[in-house]
Length: 96
Length: 96
Image (cartoon, rainbow over all chains, first blue to last red; front, side, top):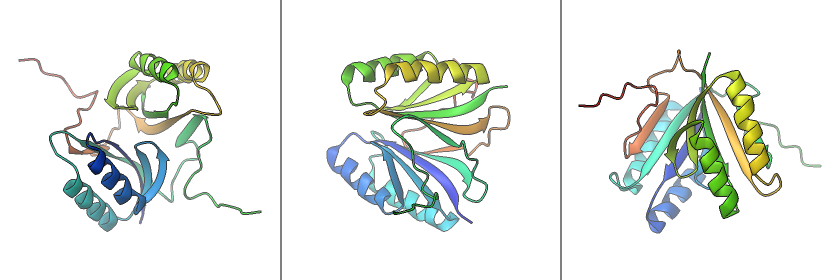
């Protein structure tokens, strides 16, 4: 069962910043500058965190992994946007 | 009853960026560059969002308000950190 995770990061070195971004692009959706939304199984989560732990400098950088609950029980108002719209990863993307 | 909100923002103009930061400092705890954790009542949330809506440019900027649940029922593993530690706002701060 997949859970929704918001993953935010403060990474000081440009190279590690690029690597963190590239890593998370493989796991989820880029919402804001250093904010990703990822829908992960328990195994995905372990692998994603292990990859990030390899990339960052543990005394200088920080990644926060925030558990927003299961994908199935996602409340409609889980993420509210002010300004530019937010598009829910799971929301059907209708191409017209 | 207070709920936990993670508030993240992408604000392009330096002046609006400072104003957004100053506004959120009044409402919560600065976790990362553009990430705050706020414990808000329903009324607080309305006022906080109204203040932010006044500050940002609605076509260029975005604030995301993510509902992490009630303060009382906060799971211990709600926010996990990799690298520099995360300190829970509600956690008792023991000064020795």
